[in-house]
Image 1 (cartoon, rainbow, N blue to C red):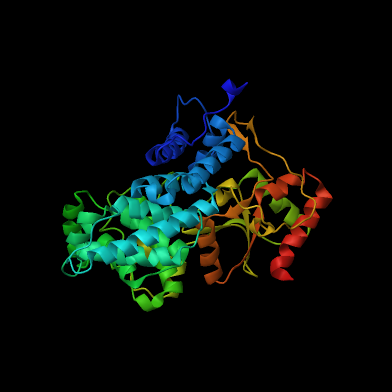
Image 2: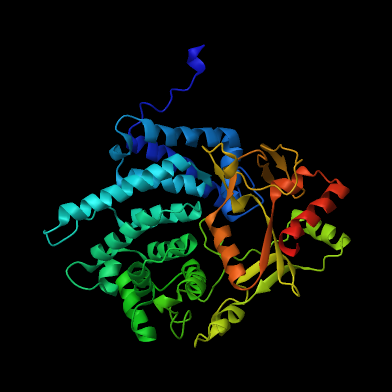
Amino acid sequence: DTSEQGRGLGGFSPQGLGNLAWSFAKQAQLSSSVTGGARLHVGTSGRQAVYETSCLDFGEKQVNRLFARIAEEAINGKGGMERFSPQDLTNTCWSLAVLGLLHRGYFDAVKESVTRRLYKNFAMSEGKGSLYPLFKSQEIANLVWSYATLNVEAPEMIDIIADYTVTICSGDKQYDESSISRFFKRQELANLSWSLAVLQQYPPDLVALTYKGLLGSGGIEGVERLNRLYDDGGMQTQQIMTLFYVQMALDMEAPQLGLSLPNGFPDAWVETSSLFSNNDSTSSSLLEINSSRLQINIGKTLEKIGFEHVQEHIIGAEDIFSIHNHEIDTSSFPADFLSIDIANLEQKIGIEVDGPAHFINVLDDDSESSLLPRHLDKIDDGGGRSFKTKSNKVAWSFLNDGRRSVNGPTALKHRLLCHLGWCIVHCPFWEWQGLRGDVDAEEEYVKELLEEVIG
């Protein structure tokens, strides 16, 4: 009976495809943040809550299938990627990133299309004295954020975006806070700077532009001018936290740029006194103080084999920034800056117990190279269903047989901890769950896990 078959996506316009993807992602994002009388009481927060909400609404396999079809129609439909406006492209990229879904073919096609368009834009503007504003600021910020969140490298695209952004903000003179604020909002600059750190790509002019746009050039005295230019009361919590992580990455990976946080930061720049609490699914925070049952069970198994450790080891901002001799007062910085799930302090060995929020699903890569390495050969596959927690919250047991890859925030945190001298090993959630409480198998698993760093 063909009446029960879906209509397919062949008749959708480029805007229709982009809007369809955006509506699914936005609905999951908004529903996950609703409390009180919400239809679904999801027990998690942030990125994982968005993932769970989308699965609870439509089913994990169905969501994956829909977005794979959207990506494939975009690539293969009549007219190809060139029929999509910058907004249509970025809406779809953003939606995939919010839901933790990567279609490699689609992101490769977007990368090529954006790069080609911007090079063409420069060529067409040559001799005219100004550059046509092809991409809006939100489109630039969301596009780069999407690649960073999904941990997809795009060096050529980032370089041409850097040239485009600096040129647009400069006009016929050197850019300043005023010209930057006419193009960007604060949050867009913060997202852009964080994304560059995640991708470990630091175009000097673009990074300097984001710093000038966020921090100004006159120290504390210039803060009021920034507030007037952006017509707000200062930087928000998430933007402040973003700059801490970006500065740490710059110190360790791009010290030649000579950029640093100014004296008096963040107090003079902050919008309110209620700092360092954010539950946004797009938050850049790398601090996770939440000892899950999974983490506690792994800790107990480590105790059995004699591995000394502490749970939730905290690394403060003062410890980090003192390493690089910053002449700034860290007393206003968050006391808790980075965390390690399970840590042996003497040997500086850390075990990160990575739940679903640390991963993305790869929709279109069937090669063995796309799979994360397994620590044991026999892991039981399963998942893909909803269940009730002990506190009567709705949760989702994610598919164990999916093609998963580490997302951008997790990759950045791993790099930063390694820069601080830690040896970090990761325990993916589905591997431990697949052991199904077999005590001998669990001990064998953690021994093999530690062999990665101890030998």
